[in-house]
Length: 174
Image (tube, rainbow, N blue to C red):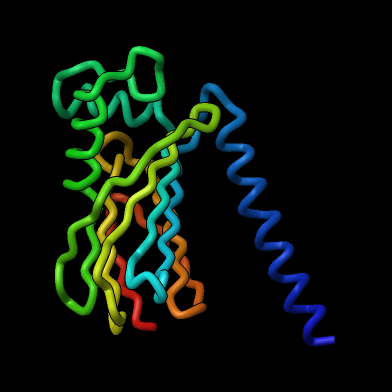
């Protein structure tokens, strides 16, 4: 009976997250401001694997405001400079510390899913995690309603954080 309850809880969680992502990617115009980040510790690879899902129009608008340049992320006329500005902005507003030490985040790739920009990052050479500190203020300077949901999996333990303009840091002690 306990095993069935665990399976049902896992199923409901997957359905809820999938529904949220479907809703996020279904609307061309949105009235809510949410980005989702998944951070997994791949112990066998000694790395953090990070995926972000951000509305591309919000990111393009933020980059125009911040750098006074129009960007075309997710468009056929996207340029290398657009990607450079995106990475600069993300790395200024998203950081991780492992065991109290700041770690370099590497951009791996990106793709579009509807109007959501999905980016893949990693942090290498992480043999063990005692603490994981996350700072995420991406798009907080764009709109006060921006919320960044962080879902982590470290040593099989899942934990979630909600970052808002007044609360952009979280600490995980697995």
